[in-house]
Length: 220
Image 1 (cartoon, rainbow, N blue to C red):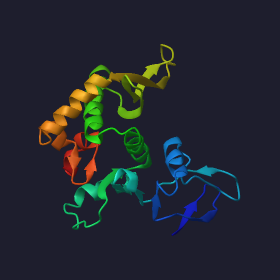
Image 2: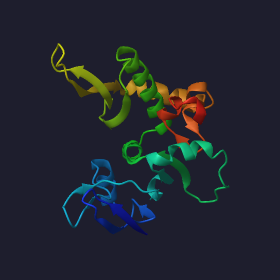
Image 3: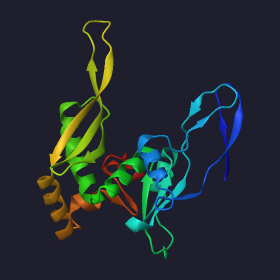
């Protein structure tokens, strides 16, 4: 589909955006989404780079999943849409909101992890971070794994660069490594008790995310 992108130089330019992409057919899309270069465009007049978000469907048949991607601007609309149409597609439908969540989910699937267990660990990490930094807007993201641990990055932590009236705050990223044993315990809990409160609270219909636990009352 053709989309218009407005630039600050008052130039509106057209770009071609796919309605649907297939990770198995185009593995390069996976790396582009993860590194943030997916659907980046440059204004032909002034050369400014743009990173817009568009609603798109991501297919990954090898993982038996189909991801419906909404933009962050559509978050409220998704929550207010109380029902979903029956889904007869053989690929399981999941929803993510925003390209950062898409990158996060694709990394989790790439590493053959269970998204529900990862989101539960994110929730506990975020609670701990918010207790320590109550005035900061915290976001927790999956960042990769090794044989012994899973790595998470906690964004939004602010620290003053100096003191006094001229103090400035800079955002820091905290790196947290969680043992594979803790991940496995969380996974076992999910497999045995998928209806436990923590796991059900993380999901709103097809949307599984720690952000469901933090949404405002008017969107519940």
